[in-house]
Image (cartoon, rainbow, N blue to C red):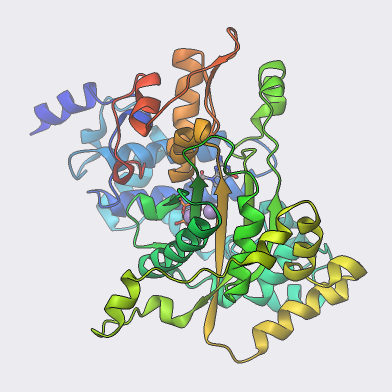
Length: 431
Ligand code: GTP
Ligand code: MN
Ligand code: MN
């Protein structure tokens, strides 16, 4: 009833991180319209401020958490994140089935090109804009140019564009993370492997596979990542990728708020890359014969010669194995040729984006929250922590910048309680 709805709106929690937002909600038609406006603003204002995009994002986040289906804009009375612009769009959708503003955006050549270009791994809005300015219409134009920036992500992102734009299924993601778990366990017994990102929030598909690794003993995780990549490489699962060293420094965090912020980015050791998922990953065998095999311990590919590469010499040898040969020659031609040759060859695997993140146990539960997302959940929780509690929330911890001390957590629940927030299940963080 209208009275109940008004009551609900009055008590509606101000922050997205205080609300439950499931994947399946009651106002999808409205949120998808508002999200087009958000996406358009985000692409257009990429080098300025995101405030317009953010306003749309907040509005769609509210719609996702509403306990009723909106049939009339009157029902939105009292909800502070639903402004006049959004109300107009919602009325249009409710009255005519679509919003003319949204339809215009979807039809616009600029938007279509921006969407296409930014869907390439390694391409953000500013590069996409530069491509449009050069008069490029499609990905062939970019291919012809041969990745002038020399960025490996763009070269491989273009070469495997089709594969990478087929959504990763949940079954594949689980199959891959089980292999990661097995290999990591051989290298570092007791390792904790968690499938994070959208899959942890219950999504059935994603644009990549995000895996967070840790170990009950703080510091034991050091040295795991290079060995893990080598082991996955030995199993023929690695196509290309790049390691980032851990760059977390608490002294910098406390000294310089701005320097330590870096937006969404964190300072964990990680590997961002493209893996080869055998096609069998997405069609797991269901024959009785294959069943016991799953339960049997899988032989490790880790052996003594692999262990021998565990020290400093490893970084060099790894780069040779898993980065384009062009890295050495520096010629942009070679960077372009290598991925294209591989992508053109007949193959029984799909290229898939994979993020592997290593977190020490002392930061693990914050990393878990950060890497589970959603992106908007994180952004909102960080803003809430700053504005409401005067604390700095990152994927590394929750910090009191004045007292110069972290609030440590031994569980995800403890992260929420430090934040004075009700615990929200990962499936309810789809805001
Ligand atoms: P799909 O992969 O499209 O299904 O969505 P997703 O929610 O998994 O997004 P994505 O893989 O981009 O990121 C997973 C979560 O990790 C999101 O909440 C991001 O905000 C977060 N994330 C991504 N990259 C970084 C990063 O470099 N640092 C931190 N701290 N978080 C990140
Ligand atoms: Mn993801
Ligand atoms: Mn990711």
